[in-house]
Each structure stands twice: as structure tokens, then as C-alpha cells.
Image 1 (cartoon, one colour):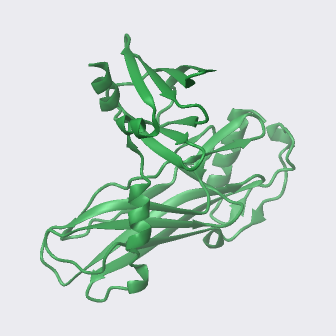
Image 2 (cartoon, one colour):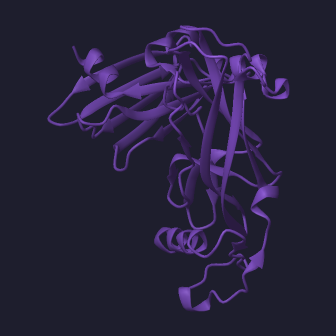
Length: 289
């Protein structure tokens, strides 16, 4: 199955109805050969969408963390902001809340999914918790936050588009079951850090500017593994990797347009845990100075 066909099939599923999925027999097929029946799945059982908060109390100028939570059924996954070769990005929309200023959602680093036909995707399994910083900007006894989300849930043989809405009340009338400071603190802690923080793992980084391009080099101690998740299309123009007695060495030639801020997420596994780092236009410009 080609990448183009895979993307077309997923988009066909997404446009085909909220309770249908496309199931294939697994082998490479042409579009004329894909005549499997549509099977019914309940999207609400595949992904449960809800809102959490770090605290139920509110006071003017107080800062808190909200979280958009996606509980994904076993064997299924949803997609990152850049889904990869196919799939659809997960989206979160917040309704304006008077008296509460809410920052944009901060998505954690994704994982990679490899499928037949050299299809590479980026997304999440299990529970995805997307934190959002918020500030109480006016006096009030309570505030109600409303949000909606859309996603595409997939497994190896099927994809199901889904959407949901959720609300949470802060202050008077708050549902304490939706208050989970530990989970939100862990979600914030695991967010991608600035690339400079890779030095805490013994890593080094450097860039060389070019005409409309940048060369990024990452050196890591032996035993560390690395994955780059591009945020925009056609970011990576060239990639090379080698290993010697001093460790692992990676080099990318990046086409980084100035109008784009968030370029990529870097995932580094040190053998014990995975760490994420953010590559932005500002990062490359700072390193190039």
C-alpha cells in the first residue's frame, strides 16, 4: 500500500461518518480492490474526552493548570499535531471563558507508529493529557470551561473518527473528581524542554547556518537512542548517523522557514526513560549566532 493510498483511505474513513471504520484484509491492495464492508464501532468507547484541573479554588490573579484528557482504548491510538504519512491531527478547541485567560494547549512528545507499506505515523496510546496554563483575570465565585475535541482513532486494521465535548466548573459547584494536581503536574513536567537542556543527559548540540537552511548536529553518549518528530512538512532535507568510541552522532539538514516557530520535537531515550526537547526557529537562530 502506498503512502498516498493510505492517506486517502484514512481521509475516506474520516469523511464517512462518526460510527464507521474501514477494515482491510491486511495485504497491499489497489483502491478498486478495497471493497470490505464498513464495520460499526462506538467512538465513545474508543476515546473518552474530559477536562481536568489542578485546583478547584479560584481567586483573582491565581494561576492554575487545566488539562484535556483523552483515554484511549487498548490497541488503538490517536495522532499528534503532525500525524505523519497518514491520519488526522488531534484538535482541541476551547470556548472563551469570561474572567479566565487560558493559554494554548501544550501537546506532549509523541511516539512513532510503523505500518505496512513504509507508513510512519506519530501519535499517542493509553492516556493523553494535554496541559493548558490558565490565569484568573477577574473576581468571580465560579467559572465554567467548555471545550470540544476531534481525533482519528486507529488500530492496525481500522480507523474511526471521533469527537467529543467536555466542561469543568471551578470555584463554587466544582466537581472534585475532576481535580487532579498530581496528574497535571506530571504532564507539565514531561512536556518538551528547550533543546539546550539536552546537556543534562551529557548531550551536545551545534548548528551551522546555510542559505535558507540550517545544519543541526546532536552528539549523545553511547547507548542513547534518538528520534526526530518534524512539526512541519519537508523540514528534514538530509539525515545521517554514525557511531564511534565517543558515542552517537546525528546530523540533519533542515529547511526551516522563518515564519514557523515550532519546528520539531526531539525524543531521546537514555536506557531508563524518554526525554523530549523542542526545536524552534528561535532555537536555531540562537545557536547560529
